Image (cartoon, rainbow, N blue to C red; front, side, top):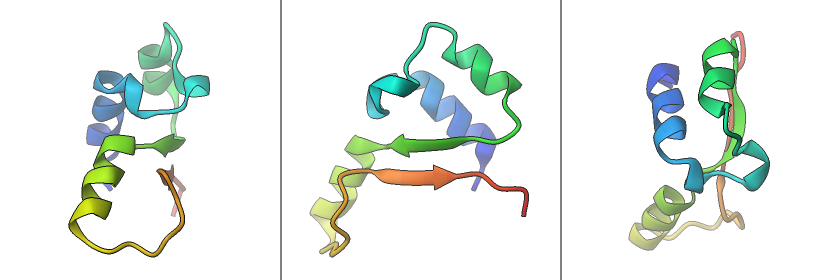
Length: 68
């Protein structure tokens, strides 16, 4: 995963993530964070599930950046 692009996407698409993740200083928090754990990507998930049959009973995507 390109974490630089992930961070950029998050900063530019706050509405795609849960309310707990939205804050006035979120861009600064993302810049200072070594790793990101997040959930959302609602529009992207809806587009993907409309294109192919997805059997995963979820409404969003979870993303956990690890040190591996």
